[in-house]
Image (cartoon, rainbow, N blue to C red; front, side, top):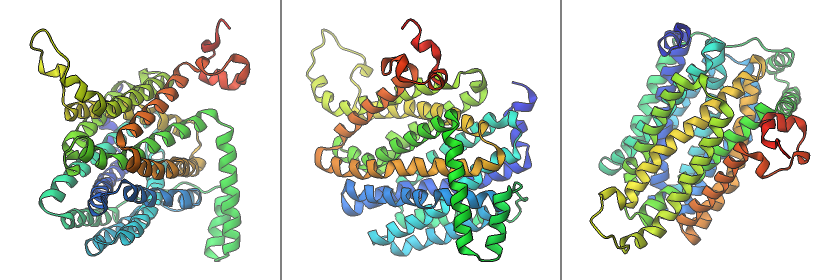
Length: 457
């Protein structure tokens, strides 16, 4: 790798470094909060459906605010957005200390926190290409992805032990302190903004003149233009669908994890730190480092297709593990076998979580890179806002259904069904000719998927 594209040269960029430090603090707080609340709500209610309601309150803000948030982020200095959001997030986290026993209050605060997070995520994602040269984008995205999921690892990893040994107040308090530090550091940020287009300039004038009807009209025009832009670019649309699917899967797994651990593995949900979070995070970090080093040499479509297929297989294995485990105990062997021939369910989950981490990062980094490379600077935040709406909007019904169905049928069958669906998606990406004949798809679609899949028909 040349000097211009190594990790050190990207981190040496002051603008990127500022974003990176803020991301670490904010993502540590967000991930710690989300995991702690999932465990806390399950402890309060003993219900997968209640956890579904919590995930619903996490995802809903992106659906309501996502499209319009992108329009605003494109015309406002990202520094100001990040600074204000850090401040109000800190206040929200501290308030949970006093409202932790009320499920309605938890849901409302969670909604507000994630509404703020929606603007933060768009400001952060759209700022990366403004502070990093194009030839360093995949390395910068790899660093951000590794940091994102390292924060996931540390935030989730600390939440369980803190909740077990010190109580939920410590989790909320430490999160609030981290965000207070992030706010203080953001005061030293340089300006991070792009030149607004004609519609952006009109929106700025309407905001200054408080013409709210005009603001809505301009915002709607921008939203429709963004949708037309996405519809006209197959790589952008496909990346959005893939990233939305990943988010849907994450949401469903988050709903199922507490019940799966306690009712299938018979261990405390707070011990998810050891059997799920740490191995998953380590897999993500290792996968991200490998992608950062060799990602430019790999074909993105094949890498994503194989990773989706593998993730589906892992989900299917986790689902059937509690079913086949009792049968394994009664299988006779002619001589003593090594211990890894008869792994416990916890060991299966640890290994599967590590491999899933590698698969997930191998889907996210290439897909996000394709999305950034195929959108212009002036439209990038709006495209990412559509991505947010798709990611969370498509997840709302599945996460509600998964909680209700898990309370009725158990978590195992839901993992199995999820695995089958993901496997089919991976097979379609790798071998679309298994699902569609040549004449059933347009040339443009077949060209994107790879014309070689239909050779010989």
